[in-house]
Image (cartoon, rainbow, N blue to C red):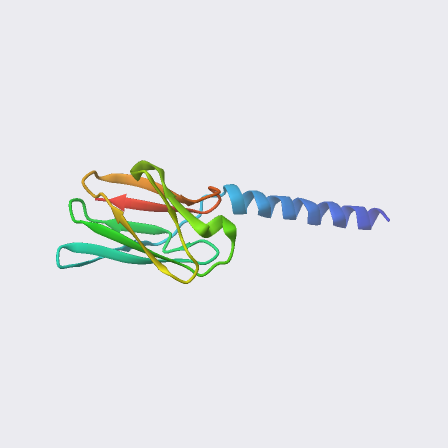
Length: 125
């Protein structure tokens, strides 16, 4: 009986630790630079249980387009919000949605799903 209680306590603490790490831990992601062609830069972002790539690097001063394609049926991911750029765009399922980004100002900017649960980062340098 005591062994069962100790085992349940250990498993419970492990689950709580995993949840804290998953939602609040700092996870590193690879930076992906946009392709520049004909003085325009673009990158495709897959929306499927999150964003891939999660971190996008753009060149300052070069017009940019991020192409979001949503594969995930979740209603959480049916919008993408770039609050710094005033963008709150619907993402229809299985369709490419172009979002133009103003690259005149360097810096790091966040984007998120409509419920602010999934995030991405935009770096302009």
